[in-house]
Length: 428
Image (tube, rainbow, N blue to C red; front, side, top):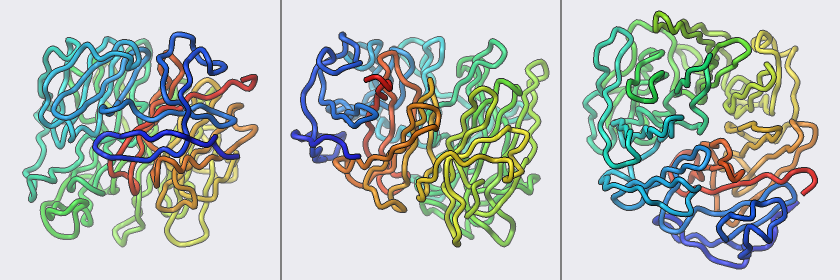
């Protein structure tokens, strides 16, 4: 199945990109789309509509009717899904933003380089947030060997980072780092007060292969980073997700099989709110060519779903998997729902829709998407080649108009553009 042929060109943020194939249609003209949606360049497949980012701005996160974005030298906030941007403020490091989250009370938490910021007043002001370590002390970024590469301390590969936990909104995420942007320690962060206070939930050990030597991903020399008391090492966190049926969080990491130990772990964490204390346990550790080198963790009706980006030595153990959480460490109890036969580390599930993507450097598709509209009973894959060679990631929950927000990364994680996808109902 192929997307419809496109007819227009579109300028992305800082990059001219040819979109071979869109037509101008209004919300009223597209079947199943809300009548009040602003006319835009929309393309269609049998399973979803899709459109490029708005001209001149990069929409970095969304929630319900709100959207947070940046352009050159400023940050902006919309309350009507990007139709207008009435709230804005100067922010010189806007091009360095690699993480943001809109909280339930409207607060916006965002990072640039190794700094974290919070706005509590619709971007009239913002202030820098200092993370607190587990002992209550300030957790300060290390002094980088290269000031231009201080490390991706807060960058997340996922767009879903908040959950209702027993009536309290919790923000929990891990940093995907040590690829570009400089070496960084690997942590899981959390906040239970709408971003006012951000704390360390878990710190991984010092990886001897990701010391800060001034390069984009670190190396075997330079400043050692991480918890010296923790023997569990990894390169970065792929995903953190919450299972309400267990009142527990799960995290998975990558990537390599090192002489010091494997880096692909799954951890299960529980949070004691009364004591403000975490208990994390490693559930399984496996090789980089296994199904446990993964991402896209989702929980639906108590069942655990994830997608593997297995690589390294053949044979590869890839696919979209489902199991009871108690059976995570038992592959014989897993159900493989679909195998795209390529590395695929990002996935979101919402309202019966499963949306996942290909890792572009490993895929025969330029911009590959995987979709199921019926919780995995049937599947389709599409190549949106008009976007160029891109790896989709950071899938945000659908906004109040039904559009998912997706990052498009060059290579695997280098920030490039973003886009929107709106699934069609089976009857559409």
